[in-house]
Length: 509
Image (cartoon, rainbow, N blue to C red):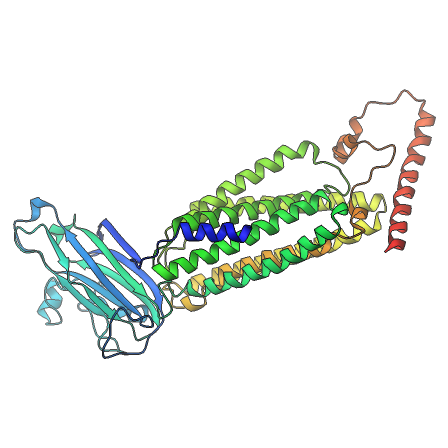
């Protein structure tokens, strides 16, 4: 049923036509130095074999195609012809071949009067030099606006890519009268295997692999739940929810990249669903880990007064995570557009840190309760759970340091072929932690031994109070010497009952 639903969503939200990767809708140029620049896109492209009969209709050819690129200017500046408007395509290693300077002065993109006097370039042209690896690159071509002409269209053109690299497209002009110029149209970027940008291409196969991994985990977990359905605990039902959300998320991400690769258009509907399922899964996983750390279902039957606080933290994290993921993924078609603003990254990082602090403080309190009541079986499983969390956090901190180092050393995205490993690692880490938790709390005939079991004298309200609030209990009218006697005997009897219960369960195993 789930797979049928996902397949239906995939088919109904797909557009089965070949379309642009980058669309321009009246985009304006920005002033950069002595030039006016508009960034048309950046993608990692794998090379294809050079062909004398190159056509962009071939499935195994890499290319960048310009379609219906139109430049428009205001009517008030149309009384004269303009300087050329250029399209500049270059590989990131050739970035130093764009622009120049006279006598070692400030670097400029447009040809200055000093450079024109030296005969290096013509005034108003884009300064560029041939690449050392391929004299045909960078690719620079353009059009001009004639007198009284309001718009001009760049001729349709396809550029074959025969060298693997990170390619950049800029539209540049040097005419100050065209500061309000806008560009419309589209460019199509294609790899030998499809329209998916090179940095994203490995992620399609990765999410396919992760979908299979979640299916295998789901088969194991659901079979155990069906086999021991009488012994299933509320905590195990929560884990079932996380596994189901993970299956949906991985499948939707795979469909998202597969559709993008097929048509060249990022499917907005599928991307939003994938982002939403992912945000719900991450939020649910953090809440469940917090609940386990607080001893829910093990040393306390409810969360008591903490329920509203946990829900509030979870809702806040979900909203922050959803906004961040939508910014990074929805509509993103460029290999450089996955960098979210710091304003949206910080809330998620702060909330994650708050989760971690609360989880370990709760684990410390739960350990004390288990040790005080001598619940050895439960104490052992919590010790393993704590070790797994500690290892995951240490690995996360190490990977964050590596990620910062990687990005600081890869300013121009020259290592784009390995960039997919960074988001893939976080998925693998969370999946590994989920496997550990599932193995610790897998449904079995002895599942109830890890569940909360209050003694005859216990009430649920006692477990909802923290240790420091127990001193506020109303004094008993029983004489003080009897109170002392009861306080010495009751905990011992309760501990003995719990210990005997654990020993009997160990024998049954």
